[in-house]
Image (cartoon, rainbow, N blue to C red; front, side):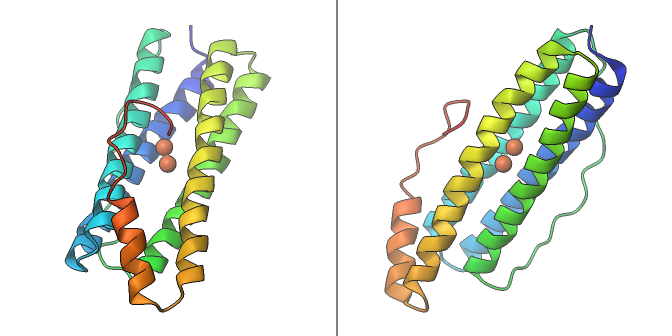
Length: 169
Ligand SMILES: [Fe+2]
Ligand SMILES: [Fe+2]
């Protein structure tokens, strides 16, 4: 049986994952208006992945005798300053998620809730991966600087991202 305070924290995390999905979908829409179709596709897949994260926690709560309590989703930002600003906001968001995941892990340790601890371990790995991938895209955008050619090359590459297979990638 899931510890009550851990269950409450995971329910908050479910809301945060759905919000992340919403933010990324909003970013995808904006990127598409900028004709950066590769970035837009990459961001749509990112939105899908966040939904998968939310559902993974949703199932975890149910499979461990907890109660799922869905929350409202805030409106995400709808306009952005630049493609680089989008990716920087995305990294900032991921860092915030890493911080909340880490807090749930600590809570699970404190409450000796081992299934939750194991589940959070998966998310800690996933966050390392996401921060690394987004950080790498930002670094390459900075190398490209103001070059439209560099941006379009990266756009073509990001557009080749395969659809998620249900986990970290
Ligand atoms: Fe996530
Ligand atoms: Fe994420």
